[in-house]
Length: 418
Image 1 (cartoon, rainbow, N blue to C red):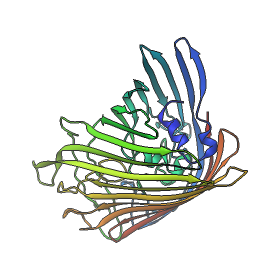
Image 2: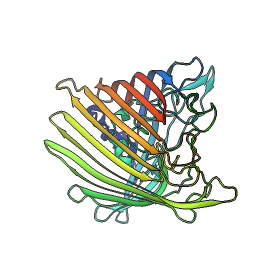
Image 3: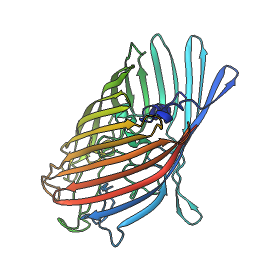
């Protein structure tokens, strides 16, 4: 199946899942249609504790909200449920294709009430030729940090966010605890041919606004006060789009692997400064580097990313302090897996961290650092060629200054590819 989520399946470190990389093929005149997708659901139990008094700022490490310490949910994991239709044809010496997908959630919010949690993550057209590459126009996975999520073992599981995102289309996996979310973006991108394992992609994507999260902390600041003030804006990139690109080299054999680098740059206009009527502008930039290798059933992945003004968890969230000054950020994770011979069960362990500088006088906690860390243990068993059973345990900790929140999630479920 020629679309990004199928690439994600192939990159998700489960041999059984990656073998199911084609859906239902249907010849239709000049076209070949491919219908495929994913269905998954998990039972999750999350135990929360800590100093934070609510979850309004997506405090991944949990909170101390009332008497709610443990929450149980049945929800989708990091991958959404999706149904995708792709088509390809050869016309006028061009390979032409399209992909459209719908992504419904697996949760309900109350008796008889279906959550409004359907997304449409992909709608794009491609055209090109093996001799010179291809061009993509439309909505698809972003370019920067895309390989970080495609190599995350929790792609086929839950990771973090099971407690705070119940009822949404997905959980967070390792997003915000090791890498920035590539997200689904409107874009125009060029991808090169594959030159003996080397390829690159470069494009422009829809520019986004700077946003802020209102964390509250019951021990260090007055409950309800902002513990991590952030500048926001409403002018996006002004007259410019965002610029993104990546390059990679992959090799096969008994010692197979891939290395990659990617980057993003976007102008941000009209950033608030905390002074009435006064705004500022700045260019936010980020880059990353990663590698993954596989030999004799063992897999090892390492990743590091660094940003200035790009924020944490999702792009441009809390990237600037309350005075409009850019914050530095770092993301990294390491991951080791082993596939049991004969049974195909993949066992994995990973640890990652995302940190953000707290560099503004308007921050209630002063020059403090915001960080999310998570370690995960997982088992992914191919019950059939297309159906996988998943068990995970994730331990997340959020720190803002002296305040700390923790969440521990156990998840059990299954994911089906077709």
